[in-house]
Length: 63
Image 1 (cartoon, helix red, strand yellow):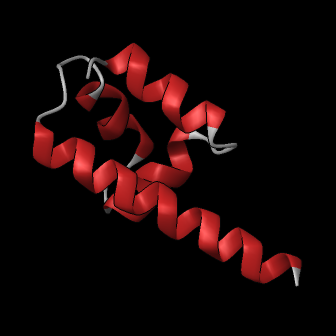
Image 2 (image 1 turned 60 degrees about the vertical axis):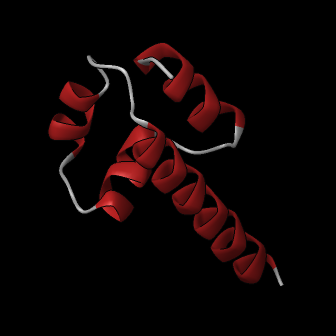
């Protein structure tokens, strides 16, 4: 998955790259640099886990 696809996935989930970067444990600047290279399968899996966590947190706050 390339950087553009990653950004679209984050955007379509309703989040910002800085939110994912924070959960990833890196700065948004470092995450931006990470987007320059294709994500490995492990990184895509981690991204999916982070998005699932953020969605769950958002749902819990809405209750």
